[in-house]
Length: 297
Image (cartoon, rainbow, N blue to C red; front, side, top):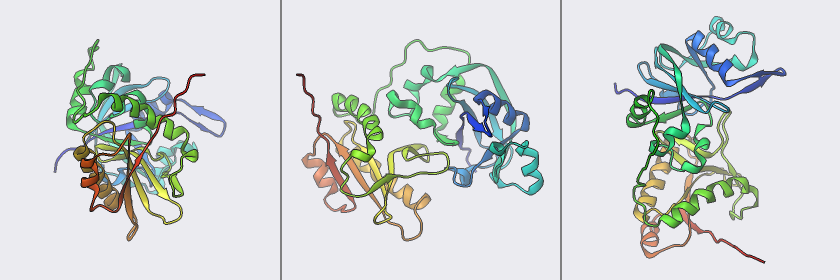
């Protein structure tokens, strides 16, 4: 069985008016040699014994702070285990989890701003933090090894070529478009009643899909369709269509209920012949063009 690679994400919480900092939570789970999982945590069922894990410690630390190996696959806790790992604090109460071994808590944590430009799973470098929602994020072996290789050194300059870029201007523009759409979701005329898909610890922005991320995963509240929304980001039409087809297939297999429809929307500055031909027989994928209104008075 092949090894998978994951990032487990720690964010702070409040519990009965008691603040649990990211450092407190991380320390407790490392002492437990256990990681709690929610029923709806993305990728929960894919966590297998022997997989490798890195730990992202969220705001204000914003760093990778350790590594471990999964001693077990994801399992359901019994009553005794719930009491053991619950610590009489509701935040730690969980129905599922994994046990950890070979835990290595790093004395020198790696700041994310040292790593961002070289990590393939972070497509939108300007808003990298949106990839660290929820409890679990799958990454590639290359990304995992790159992070490990940087434990004891700092990178002063990192340059990564963006694959399949057709227009660097549109690429830069659409990095900020994603943030604008997220902040103004309710004001966008989708022509359908679209709401961001939501789990207990993850909203629909940069929704984890295996080692990839869906720009936006939404649900049509009128039809119950799941809707995969991708920004073209200056990529070629072939690359964009191939990407959204892959995400739609993943969503059907991993998220959609039986007989629940999944469709797609591509958003870009303007359409073109190549894109129109690529979508000609794909009636479940729409293209929508955005416009920018910039005025100086």
